[in-house]
Image 1: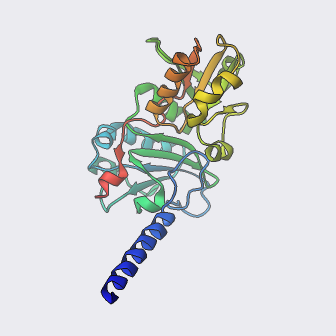
Image 2: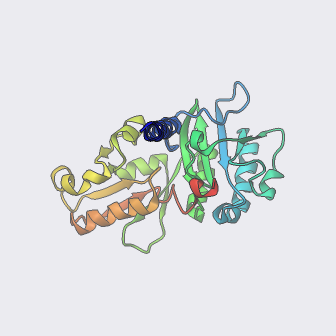
Length: 269
Protein backbone atom coordinates (compact mmCIF):
# COMPACT_ATOMS: atom_id res chain seq x y z
CA UNK A 1 0.00 0.00 0.00
CA UNK A 2 2.86 2.33 0.84
CA UNK A 3 4.41 1.72 -2.57
CA UNK A 4 1.08 2.39 -4.28
CA UNK A 5 0.70 5.62 -2.33
CA UNK A 6 4.17 6.79 -3.35
CA UNK A 7 3.49 6.00 -7.00
CA UNK A 8 0.14 7.83 -6.86
CA UNK A 9 1.77 10.83 -5.25
CA UNK A 10 4.50 10.80 -7.87
CA UNK A 11 1.96 10.73 -10.70
CA UNK A 12 0.01 13.60 -9.12
CA UNK A 13 3.20 15.64 -8.73
CA UNK A 14 4.16 14.96 -12.35
CA UNK A 15 0.71 16.06 -13.55
CA UNK A 16 0.96 19.22 -11.45
CA UNK A 17 4.41 19.90 -12.84
CA UNK A 18 3.16 19.56 -16.39
CA UNK A 19 0.29 21.96 -15.70
CA UNK A 20 2.66 24.46 -14.08
CA UNK A 21 5.10 24.23 -17.00
CA UNK A 22 2.29 24.68 -19.50
CA UNK A 23 1.12 27.77 -17.63
CA UNK A 24 4.62 29.23 -18.05
CA UNK A 25 4.46 28.92 -21.83
CA UNK A 26 3.86 32.21 -23.60
CA UNK A 27 0.76 32.50 -25.80
CA UNK A 28 1.32 32.46 -29.55
CA UNK A 29 2.80 35.73 -30.71
CA UNK A 30 0.25 37.90 -32.50
CA UNK A 31 -0.46 41.49 -33.49
CA UNK A 32 -0.96 43.65 -30.41
CA UNK A 33 0.93 41.29 -28.07
CA UNK A 34 3.59 42.64 -25.70
CA UNK A 35 7.10 41.44 -26.55
CA UNK A 36 9.52 40.62 -23.74
CA UNK A 37 11.70 37.81 -25.15
CA UNK A 38 13.75 39.70 -27.75
CA UNK A 39 14.81 43.20 -26.87
CA UNK A 40 17.00 45.68 -28.78
CA UNK A 41 19.40 48.15 -27.24
CA UNK A 42 17.98 50.51 -24.63
CA UNK A 43 15.98 53.40 -26.03
CA UNK A 44 14.98 51.73 -29.31
CA UNK A 45 11.19 51.47 -29.46
CA UNK A 46 10.81 50.29 -33.08
CA UNK A 47 12.65 47.17 -34.17
CA UNK A 48 12.32 43.99 -36.20
CA UNK A 49 12.43 40.38 -35.02
CA UNK A 50 13.52 37.75 -37.56
CA UNK A 51 13.12 34.14 -36.33
CA UNK A 52 14.48 31.55 -38.74
CA UNK A 53 16.05 28.08 -38.77
CA UNK A 54 18.40 26.29 -41.15
CA UNK A 55 16.45 23.10 -40.32
CA UNK A 56 13.29 24.51 -41.90
CA UNK A 57 12.89 24.35 -45.71
CA UNK A 58 10.60 27.41 -45.69
CA UNK A 59 13.30 29.38 -43.86
CA UNK A 60 15.97 28.24 -46.30
CA UNK A 61 13.73 29.16 -49.25
CA UNK A 62 13.26 32.63 -47.72
CA UNK A 63 16.97 33.43 -47.25
CA UNK A 64 17.22 35.85 -50.18
CA UNK A 65 14.11 37.74 -49.06
CA UNK A 66 15.24 37.88 -45.43
CA UNK A 67 18.55 39.35 -46.62
CA UNK A 68 16.52 42.04 -48.41
CA UNK A 69 14.46 42.61 -45.27
CA UNK A 70 17.59 43.05 -43.16
CA UNK A 71 19.13 45.42 -45.70
CA UNK A 72 15.88 47.35 -45.93
CA UNK A 73 15.67 47.63 -42.14
CA UNK A 74 19.29 48.79 -41.93
CA UNK A 75 18.73 51.48 -44.54
CA UNK A 76 15.68 52.70 -42.59
CA UNK A 77 17.50 52.72 -39.28
CA UNK A 78 15.37 49.87 -37.86
CA UNK A 79 17.32 47.62 -35.48
CA UNK A 80 17.07 43.89 -36.19
CA UNK A 81 17.02 41.11 -33.59
CA UNK A 82 17.82 37.72 -35.09
CA UNK A 83 16.11 35.04 -32.97
CA UNK A 84 17.26 31.41 -32.91
CA UNK A 85 15.69 28.44 -31.13
CA UNK A 86 19.12 26.84 -30.82
CA UNK A 87 22.62 28.32 -30.97
CA UNK A 88 23.73 29.08 -34.54
CA UNK A 89 20.45 27.70 -35.88
CA UNK A 90 19.72 30.39 -38.48
CA UNK A 91 20.94 29.83 -42.06
CA UNK A 92 24.59 30.74 -42.48
CA UNK A 93 23.72 33.31 -45.18
CA UNK A 94 21.60 35.15 -42.61
CA UNK A 95 24.15 34.92 -39.80
CA UNK A 96 26.69 36.63 -42.06
CA UNK A 97 24.44 39.68 -42.03
CA UNK A 98 24.88 40.02 -38.26
CA UNK A 99 26.64 43.31 -37.60
CA UNK A 100 26.50 46.40 -35.40
CA UNK A 101 22.79 46.86 -36.09
CA UNK A 102 21.84 43.22 -35.50
CA UNK A 103 21.81 41.27 -32.25
CA UNK A 104 21.52 37.48 -32.22
CA UNK A 105 19.52 35.98 -29.36
CA UNK A 106 18.73 32.36 -28.51
CA UNK A 107 15.29 32.04 -26.96
CA UNK A 108 13.06 29.26 -25.70
CA UNK A 109 10.22 28.49 -28.08
CA UNK A 110 7.92 28.00 -25.09
CA UNK A 111 8.66 31.39 -23.60
CA UNK A 112 8.73 33.36 -26.85
CA UNK A 113 5.33 32.46 -28.29
CA UNK A 114 6.89 31.83 -31.71
CA UNK A 115 5.00 28.89 -33.18
CA UNK A 116 6.59 28.58 -36.61
CA UNK A 117 9.58 29.58 -38.69
CA UNK A 118 10.24 31.75 -40.46
CA UNK A 119 8.53 34.50 -38.46
CA UNK A 120 9.12 38.22 -38.88
CA UNK A 121 7.57 40.66 -36.40
CA UNK A 122 7.65 44.46 -36.37
CA UNK A 123 7.62 45.76 -32.81
CA UNK A 124 6.61 49.32 -31.94
CA UNK A 125 6.44 50.68 -28.39
CA UNK A 126 6.85 47.16 -27.01
CA UNK A 127 3.98 45.57 -28.96
CA UNK A 128 3.78 43.60 -32.19
CA UNK A 129 2.39 45.92 -34.86
CA UNK A 130 3.12 43.73 -37.88
CA UNK A 131 3.47 39.96 -38.17
CA UNK A 132 4.46 37.74 -41.10
CA UNK A 133 4.96 33.98 -40.72
CA UNK A 134 6.03 31.46 -43.32
CA UNK A 135 7.19 31.57 -46.93
CA UNK A 136 5.55 34.68 -48.38
CA UNK A 137 4.54 35.24 -51.99
CA UNK A 138 5.69 38.26 -54.02
CA UNK A 139 2.67 40.38 -53.11
CA UNK A 140 3.09 39.66 -49.40
CA UNK A 141 6.80 40.47 -49.61
CA UNK A 142 6.04 43.86 -51.17
CA UNK A 143 3.46 44.55 -48.46
CA UNK A 144 6.00 43.80 -45.73
CA UNK A 145 8.70 46.01 -47.24
CA UNK A 146 6.15 48.77 -47.69
CA UNK A 147 5.22 48.53 -44.02
CA UNK A 148 8.86 48.74 -42.96
CA UNK A 149 9.19 51.84 -45.11
CA UNK A 150 6.23 53.46 -43.39
CA UNK A 151 3.85 52.87 -46.30
CA UNK A 152 0.93 50.69 -45.28
CA UNK A 153 0.31 48.47 -48.29
CA UNK A 154 -2.48 45.90 -48.10
CA UNK A 155 -3.41 43.07 -50.45
CA UNK A 156 -6.99 42.10 -51.28
CA UNK A 157 -7.97 38.95 -53.11
CA UNK A 158 -11.48 37.94 -54.12
CA UNK A 159 -12.58 34.49 -53.00
CA UNK A 160 -13.08 32.20 -55.99
CA UNK A 161 -11.43 34.57 -58.46
CA UNK A 162 -8.16 33.96 -60.30
CA UNK A 163 -7.56 37.69 -60.76
CA UNK A 164 -4.37 39.21 -59.36
CA UNK A 165 -4.74 40.60 -55.80
CA UNK A 166 -5.28 44.32 -55.40
CA UNK A 167 -2.50 46.23 -53.67
CA UNK A 168 -3.76 49.39 -51.98
CA UNK A 169 -2.24 52.08 -49.79
CA UNK A 170 -3.94 53.11 -46.56
CA UNK A 171 -6.15 55.89 -47.93
CA UNK A 172 -7.21 53.94 -51.03
CA UNK A 173 -7.95 50.92 -48.84
CA UNK A 174 -10.28 52.91 -46.58
CA UNK A 175 -12.12 54.27 -49.60
CA UNK A 176 -12.44 50.78 -51.09
CA UNK A 177 -13.70 49.32 -47.79
CA UNK A 178 -16.36 52.00 -47.31
CA UNK A 179 -18.95 50.01 -49.25
CA UNK A 180 -18.57 46.74 -47.35
CA UNK A 181 -18.38 45.02 -43.98
CA UNK A 182 -15.03 44.14 -42.41
CA UNK A 183 -15.32 40.80 -40.61
CA UNK A 184 -12.78 39.62 -38.01
CA UNK A 185 -13.11 35.95 -36.98
CA UNK A 186 -10.43 35.85 -34.28
CA UNK A 187 -11.35 35.15 -30.65
CA UNK A 188 -12.59 38.06 -28.54
CA UNK A 189 -9.33 38.49 -26.60
CA UNK A 190 -7.26 38.87 -29.77
CA UNK A 191 -9.88 41.18 -31.28
CA UNK A 192 -9.97 43.46 -28.23
CA UNK A 193 -6.18 43.69 -28.22
CA UNK A 194 -6.12 45.26 -31.67
CA UNK A 195 -8.44 45.30 -34.66
CA UNK A 196 -9.32 47.18 -37.82
CA UNK A 197 -11.45 50.22 -37.10
CA UNK A 198 -15.13 49.45 -37.62
CA UNK A 199 -14.63 45.67 -37.90
CA UNK A 200 -17.35 43.24 -36.81
CA UNK A 201 -16.09 40.42 -34.57
CA UNK A 202 -17.68 36.99 -35.05
CA UNK A 203 -15.29 34.29 -33.74
CA UNK A 204 -14.68 31.45 -36.18
CA UNK A 205 -16.58 28.87 -34.11
CA UNK A 206 -19.65 31.13 -34.02
CA UNK A 207 -19.63 32.13 -37.66
CA UNK A 208 -22.09 29.51 -38.91
CA UNK A 209 -24.71 30.42 -36.29
CA UNK A 210 -24.36 34.20 -36.39
CA UNK A 211 -23.65 35.20 -39.99
CA UNK A 212 -27.27 35.10 -41.18
CA UNK A 213 -28.37 37.20 -38.19
CA UNK A 214 -25.63 39.83 -38.05
CA UNK A 215 -24.41 40.25 -41.60
CA UNK A 216 -26.45 42.37 -44.02
CA UNK A 217 -27.72 41.57 -47.50
CA UNK A 218 -26.02 38.73 -49.36
CA UNK A 219 -25.06 41.19 -52.07
CA UNK A 220 -23.00 43.26 -49.60
CA UNK A 221 -19.23 43.07 -49.96
CA UNK A 222 -17.76 41.04 -47.07
CA UNK A 223 -14.07 41.58 -46.32
CA UNK A 224 -12.37 39.06 -44.03
CA UNK A 225 -9.46 40.56 -42.11
CA UNK A 226 -6.88 37.78 -42.36
CA UNK A 227 -4.08 39.59 -40.55
CA UNK A 228 -2.61 37.16 -38.01
CA UNK A 229 -4.93 34.32 -39.05
CA UNK A 230 -3.68 31.18 -40.77
CA UNK A 231 -4.35 31.60 -44.49
CA UNK A 232 -6.05 28.20 -44.73
CA UNK A 233 -8.39 29.04 -41.88
CA UNK A 234 -9.24 32.44 -43.34
CA UNK A 235 -9.92 30.91 -46.76
CA UNK A 236 -12.10 28.30 -45.05
CA UNK A 237 -14.18 31.05 -43.44
CA UNK A 238 -14.58 32.70 -46.85
CA UNK A 239 -15.76 29.42 -48.36
CA UNK A 240 -18.27 29.01 -45.51
CA UNK A 241 -19.63 32.51 -46.11
CA UNK A 242 -20.20 31.70 -49.77
CA UNK A 243 -21.47 28.15 -49.38
CA UNK A 244 -23.70 28.47 -46.30
CA UNK A 245 -24.44 32.19 -46.13
CA UNK A 246 -24.73 32.56 -49.91
CA UNK A 247 -22.71 35.78 -49.84
CA UNK A 248 -21.62 36.56 -53.38
CA UNK A 249 -18.81 39.10 -52.91
CA UNK A 250 -16.25 37.85 -50.37
CA UNK A 251 -12.71 39.26 -50.15
CA UNK A 252 -9.63 38.39 -48.13
CA UNK A 253 -7.61 41.28 -46.69
CA UNK A 254 -3.88 40.64 -46.22
CA UNK A 255 -4.41 36.97 -47.01
CA UNK A 256 -1.45 34.83 -46.04
CA UNK A 257 0.03 37.02 -43.32
CA UNK A 258 0.45 33.55 -41.84
CA UNK A 259 1.59 31.11 -44.52
CA UNK A 260 3.41 27.77 -44.89
CA UNK A 261 5.99 27.35 -42.11
CA UNK A 262 7.74 24.80 -39.91
CA UNK A 263 6.20 24.08 -36.53
CA UNK A 264 8.50 25.18 -33.72
CA UNK A 265 7.44 22.18 -31.63
CA UNK A 266 8.75 19.93 -34.42
CA UNK A 267 12.02 21.85 -34.71
CA UNK A 268 12.55 21.73 -30.95
CA UNK A 269 12.55 17.94 -30.76
